Amino acid sequence: MSKQYKFEAKEVNAYYGDFHAIKGINLAVEEKGVTAFIGPSGCGKSTFLRLFNRMNDYIEGFRLEGKILLDNKDIYRKKVQVDELRKKVGMVFQKPNPFPKSIFENVVYGLRIQGINKKKVLEEAVESSLKQAALWDEVKDKLHKSALALSGGQQQRLCIARALAIEPTVLLMDEPASALDPISSAKIEELIYELKEQYTIVIVTHNMQQAGRVSDYTAFFLSGELVEYSKTKTLFTSPHDKRTQNYITGRFG
Ligand SMILES: Nc1ncnc2c1ncn2[C@@H]1O[C@H](COP(=O)(O)OP(=O)(O)OP(=O)(O)O)[C@@H](O)[C@H]1O
Image (cartoon, rainbow, N blue to C red; front, side):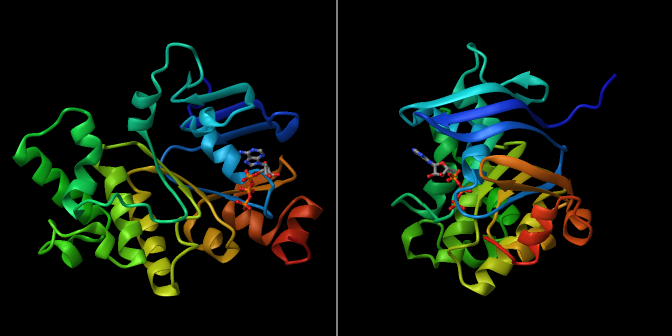
């Protein structure tokens, strides 16, 4: 039997209207651990990432060809319920986007939508998600204060806690640390390192050092194509493709 991956993209092409943004990509993401997508601005990293939880579905004129499998099942087949998919595949964005609510209500937001309102269940979820997101100690005495009063780095960890509360198996992260100061950014990296034991993490990053530090596998994209995909160490120390080498040595991008 062939190996089962967490995600598999098969012959994937994606279009915004006439614009061909993703070109014939095949890529398999290992279960658990971190896979990083790198490449110059506009190469299609975010578009490709967003395919994994059908985030591009909302964009007018967007069209997909090929298949994206999660646990061996096509997530674009007709009977898939997108909200169910997103329970399994959480997402964290570049800019922290807490809701204008308390820290507590931010974390339990997804659970309340699922109709879970039991106080004890919610309290447990808040504590365990905030602990996993390495934020608990900083906020445990002000859970009912506004999330908007937190620092940017704390807000981003809160958004990670909010994503974890619905118990996904995958976390998609689109440049999760790029809007943060270096210390907050380092905290997010440490957190990713902790979480990868338990979750499959796919991260888009502009920062090659960051990709080198946090990821197990790295995919290099250029103009909508996947140029090279391998173990992070291999990609950064002995890339096969000249274009990868040029990019990682700073010759373009
Ligand atoms: N909603 C959209 N409508 C039309 N074109 C889009 C849309 N979103 C992205 N594109 C185009 O698709 C291409 C890939 O964009 P994408 O955001 O995926 O790249 P990226 O590698 O993530 O870039 P960056 O690192 O700058 O975020 C770009 O040429 C972009 O202009």
